Image (cartoon, rainbow, N blue to C red):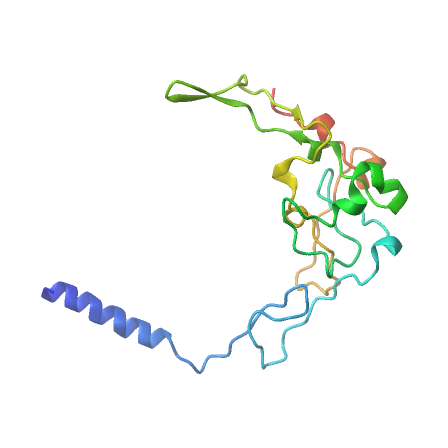
Length: 192
């Protein structure tokens, strides 16, 4: 190694050792199942309280804004792991089962594939859609495979005392959009 490399290496080691003071207090974040990511000995972390209401006894929560993914109003303990082949949410939320289970049905958008068709022409891949065209292909009544992981968009509402007050006020175009979605009807707004 030359002198410049040795100097840089020495500086990095010195900087790293100065930054790795082990006397600092470690604070962790709570996670939904009650465990902590790291042990917090200070007792300063307020654990979030998640719904314990059963699926059959829960009531829907008003959406945060028009067409926002609805929050989960019931406990989700024991409902994981969600995979493309195993998804307990679908046992109640599939449209044909939702009324019987008193559950919100999965909306039409989840049975539609909005990705454009891409075809190979020689060495090129060509998108089969016009500019500014919203492509909507029905999945034939099967859940779109891109939407199988429900908890990427849907989450239980934690009961916490927020450190910063939320001043956002949603502006719904109709009272029905507070509890349901019309995204499949308005998805191309602003595109043309």
